[in-house]
Length: 339
Ligand SMILES: [Zn+2]
Image 1 (tube, rainbow, N blue to C red):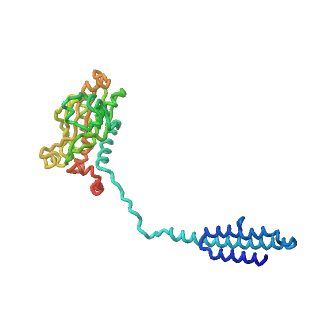
Image 2: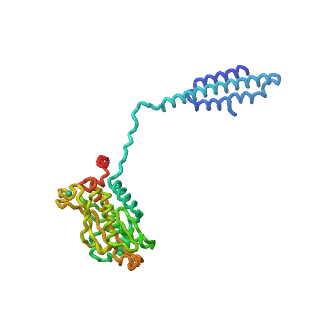
Image 3: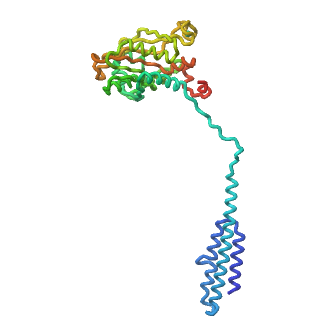
C-alpha cells in the first residue's frame, strides 16, 4: 500500500513538473485528487486494509495529497508569473515612437464672416433667429407676396419635395414665422442655408447662405433702413465706406432698393475688381410691403418695417478677395487655413 501511494505521488509530481501550460494542471488535479482520482481510489480501498493499519494509511494518503497540492500550487504560480511577464513584455509602450499627428481643422471663411455680421447686428439690438430649411411653399413664396404662378417664382426656382413642400430659396421664410408669432416690435436677422436650382459655376451654387434682416415697429421709415445699413457697411468694411441705394423691385418690399458700397479694394476710384465703377453691390432691401404685414396678421396702419437680404458668400468672397465661389465648398484645408 505504501509503495502504491509512493508510486502515485511520484507519478503526479512528475506529471505536474512536465506540464507545459496552466490548463493542464487542472486535468492533473482531477486525475489524482478528484472524486474518481487515483488517490481517492486508494482511500476507497481502505476496507481491505487491516483495521490497525488504517490510521497509518490514512495519514500517508493525506501527506501525499498535501504534497501534490503544494506542488500544483507552486507550478501554478510559476505559470502565472510567466504569463504576466509575457503580457508586460508584449504591452510595453515605446515612448520614443513619434505620436499620431492630429490634423487640426480651421474655421470656414463663411463662418468667420457670419460671426462678424452677427456681431454687428447683435450690437444694434437684433436677435438671431433660425428656421427650417425644408419649408412650406406658403412661407417661402405666398406669404412673401409671391402667389402661385407668379413669374417672380421662376427667378428662385428651387427643389420641391412635394407640390407644397420645398427646400427654402430664401431665409425670408423665417421672417414670416417670426411675424406670425405676433410679438412686436421685431428686430431680427435670420442667417441660414438656402437652395436654388442653379448650375455650379464661379458665382453660383445650388446651395448657399443668406442673412436676412427684418425690423418692424411703429414709425419705422426708409431713413431707419438707410441709417442701419450704412452703419452696417462701415462696421463691416471699415471707416470711410460710402453706400448708394439704387431703386429695384422685390415682391415683398415697396419701395425696394439694392445697396452698393464703395469698392473696398480701390476706395471708389475704379479697378478691375469693381469693373471700373468704384462700387460693388452687396445687398437688397426695402420697406416691408403692407400686404406682407397684413398676411401675417400685423396692422399696416399701425406698424411699418424694413427688410434686407445679404448673400453671405458674396461678403466672404469680397472680404477675402476670393474669385471663385466653388473654393468655399470644397473644404480643402490648404485653402481654409489661409483665413
Ligand atoms: Zn474697385
